[in-house]
Structure formats: structure tokens, C-alpha cells
Image 1 (tube, rainbow, N blue to C red):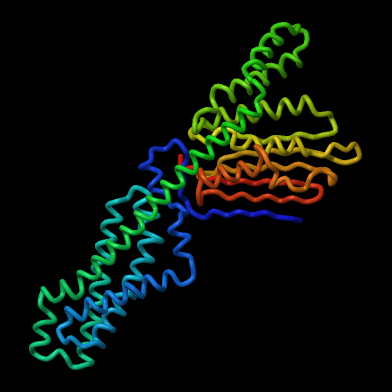
Image 2: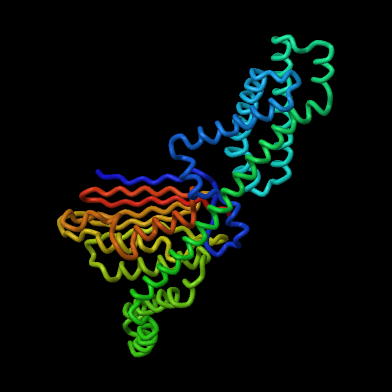
Length: 378
């Protein structure tokens, strides 16, 4: 069995149509992050910081010893590295990006005080070891000006610099992602327009045909009514960036019912779609999975063929599952199929829900399964 698994771990979410200031709060993957992953780049940056701190301490340490500057710069780098881990992994993503600025500022102040206090202890132990804390040395060491310039200022500037670099990095990444999303959105809309074959004409024709069908033929009238509702949805409601989940569900149910009437009795169709309200998703995000399920579903009289669709909301996750039996002679490469299909949906998910979704696709000879989980902040 071939398995394709894409995992996104964060609880951050953003969608097209959000104000730009909200997009900036998200955690992007951008060019600076790619550059920072090049082997040796981070080491070089920390070495540059270390050299700068050595020069700085050689100017403000009262004993002016080279070994003292090296030791103090080393411990400053260690303290700033620990601060960087706390800021980047906890404070920014879990406090600042979750609209908790007060908690972020309080924790930042606490982190600065704690690191400065530890540096003071290290300096005290070091000067005691090398014997520099004589009468004059002790008076200089405990003086306010010395502690400000030698201890507090490097830690303060370091913590603020880490925060500023992270926010600027995320801002640039969000801007790049926003521009990329707009291009992808325009391409998707163009693809849908090409695939609709003059839908206005078809929509009006269906309405006329519905009026001509006798009321004694409810099945045909019901099919035309559902097709008309689906076209209305695509034409007049899908031009927005996000749509109410209940409208998207109505479209999916109409599509399944039409396929149920169109397919023969050998194909078993089962759907477990909950009635959901209260949040929005991008239009036509889930439809390609269901369309592919019916398109490639096997239809052999000698086997138990089926299409199964399930959709439910288990706070905070929207969980979608779709599976279908398949014919081994049909195309195996559904994941990489060109056009408005799974590849397009995966690209939209990457742009709309960075690090806030999980999609698992299992493709075997007789079964094709898709399970998608999206973190929704209601």
C-alpha cells in the first residue's frame, strides 16, 4: 500500500480574505526560514554575536582581561540562546499570536530579569575565582552603572532583538504568503471558469427544462432542481473567500444525491455528514475529494463496491473522511492528477491553513481513502 501523509503541527490558522494585520500574526514558512536552515548559517550568526559581545565586554569589564571578556560573552550567548528558545517556541506563537500581549510582556520582563540575575551570579563567581573582587573591584562590580552596561543592557538588547527579528521575519513571510495565495486564488477561479462551459446558459436552460417536465415525474424534477441549486451555489456564492459551513454541506449533499440517482444499484453510497453551523471554510474545498471518489469508484457486479463520505466537527477539528473502492485498471496516480483535483486542494490547504491541518491519503489497488483534519477556531 502506498501512503502519502502530510502533517501540520501548529494551532495557527489563517484564510484568504482576512485583514492583512491578522495574517501577519500567523507563523509562516518563508525565505528567511529556509535560509536559516542552510547548514552553518545559524552557527555563523551566533559566532558574529559572540564576537560582538567579546568586543563589548572588553570595553566595560573593569578588569579589562581578555579571558574575562571571553567568559562573559560565552555566558551571555548561552543565556540569550535559552531566551531565544523560550521566545520563539512559547511566547510568540502561544501568547503574542493568541492575543495575549499582557502575558507576553510580563513573561518577557521576567525572562530578562532572570537571565540578568543568572549572569550576575556567573560574574560574581568568576571574579571571585580570579581574585578581582578586592575593595575597589567590589565597589565597581556592585555599582549601578556597571551592572546596567555590563549585565542588563546586553540581555535587554538581546531579548528585544530576538523578538524584533522574529516579528519582522513573520511579517515578511506573511506578506509573501498573502501574495502567493492571491495568485493561487486567481488561478483557481480561472480554472473553474474554464470548466463551467458557459454555466449561465446552462443554468437558464435547466430552469426552462424544469418547468416543462411533468409533475408526475418527480425523480427527474428532483435531479434538475439539485443541479440548479449546485450551479447557483458555484455561480453566485463561491466568488467569496470563505463561506458558511452549512452552505458548503448543502452543496456536498446535493452532489451525493445526484450521484446516488445516477449510479446503478451495484454501487453502495453512504454518507454521514453532520449538520454544522457557526464557522466558515473556503468554498469547494472538500468537493474535489468526493468528485474523485465517484469518478474512480469501481462498478463491478461481482464485488461490493461503495463510496463512503463522513464529515463531523470535533472541536476544534473539522474531520472529513472519504473512501471508495476502485478498479485496478484505472489510473493509480490520483494524488498527482492535473487539473482541479486533489493537487489543487493540497495547495489551497497549504496556503489557507499553514501548520493547522493534517491530510492522509492511502492509495491501494482496490481502495482509495482520504482523511483530512483542519483546526478551526470558532
